Length: 507
Image (tube, rainbow, N blue to C red; front, side, top):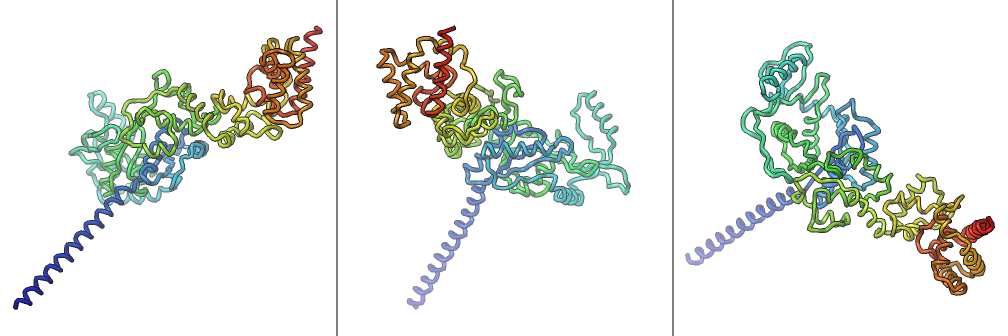
């Protein structure tokens, strides 16, 4: 009996242990599943192709991209082209070009809403069947009269629900499809930037989700897309805040999950006014054309509303590491061109010259500078990067490395190609001809020896040489300049300068 009691007790204990292990395992797997679900972040950038990708859109794209990358998530590019009248293929191409130049790579897409009409119409048909949407036969004239009366009475202008509870008509009359918005309660969401936002349902319209001709509307397409594409967080401009409660209500009616939201403030110009073409509201590619590196623009845009301590310069990896939607500033940000220029200078100076050269190539071609006969572009970058504010400026100032010039700069020639310059130019030319090797050190020594023999300061030799070789009074160190221009071109240009000085003496 005693043995049997012990055995039963052991079996009971074993059973308890097995149950505990099973429960723990189930709990752990559930926790793991929840954790994985939480960690799978998916964001999107969804521009309308009605114009270029401007800096406001680029910043929104960057924030959305960074949030995905910071959380090891996915980033979707979607083209919202339901506005058939204003959307153009050119604008679409410009958006893609801008995203590629900024290197904001996407994991999915680009999706086009105009190619998804069958899906939208399928959902609309389901909603009509379920009673979460209805056909509205009200004429345009009735709607306009209604709104005029509402305005005259000081009432909110919204659809009065005339067709809301009426049965569909067996008729060929034109109609729109409206979403049956709840009339009671409110929509509440916690915005990453603005905190808790609430809208009373009785202030919201029964939104048109399909137009008379059958095309679905923007607000509806967005909802279906975000649902189908598994978007977990929507990052967009503050001008979309009023759309959010309508979209949330449609998502709930569809039984779809509601994503998180982050509504970013607008960007103001240098003068505090709304961004215009005069200060920043231009296509992103205009910044490429003006000579900015993509990293400089991205670094500038990320700081236009977000910060991490006092740090000003961020690598892309640092942006990914530190970025958080909760750290975005609520207040509008002011565009500061001087700050952008400062960052661009920094990136031109500090980036790998080979990389800068890869972007400089475009500007050389744009300015019709043939780089096939001259130094490597990376060497030019190294030589000129200290002074250059933009790649456009760098390209223009490098022309003398690749092309001969017709005339000397008048001011520089007047100052430095005077009679006293004749002897230093002639002596240096002689030393140049005698050089056995074309090295920076040998050229530097020849300049020093010329100054020593003539018993003059280095400036009396260097400045006439600089004007002779470059045609102007500004350049990197004269020995480096001569080295990059090359021996044959240098000799030819010094001869030209000697002739210029001699003519000046004799005139």
